[in-house]
Length: 161
Image (cartoon, rainbow, N blue to C red; front, side):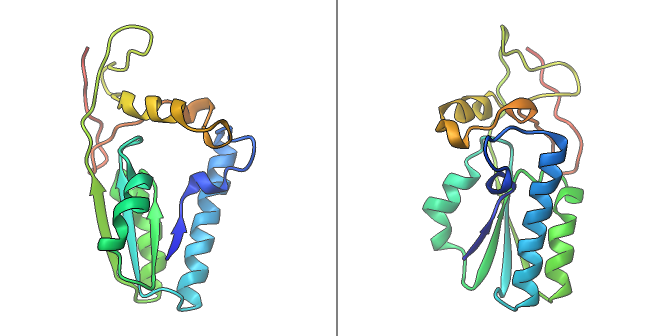
């Protein structure tokens, strides 16, 4: 199984910035393009959901029951169709079928120092909690620490504390 996740390409230290994010995503698309061009895969699975939903954990523990080899698994939030479009376009160029796996998680709002709930932006505090528990060399810092909750159709989810 070919596994691609933008987080894998952030380098060290793992500090998020727009430039590093763009470069990480480009690396994912390059990896996927090479797999399609070389006919190394017969299907693409996009595993997506909110930050902290457990996508990477699900892939490590449960994907073997569903993923049929040879395949690529794209692990990222990919909340709206526009976020998945490029990976789907790359797979389509090689007539590779794409399977979508959405991991649903509940949004949590909280008052206090970690309050997330202003109109138009909601977040899963689980994502902050899980990132904080990661080993220092894989913990993301910077803007990526803030979870982003968006509906799959691209709209935001309102959450009021």
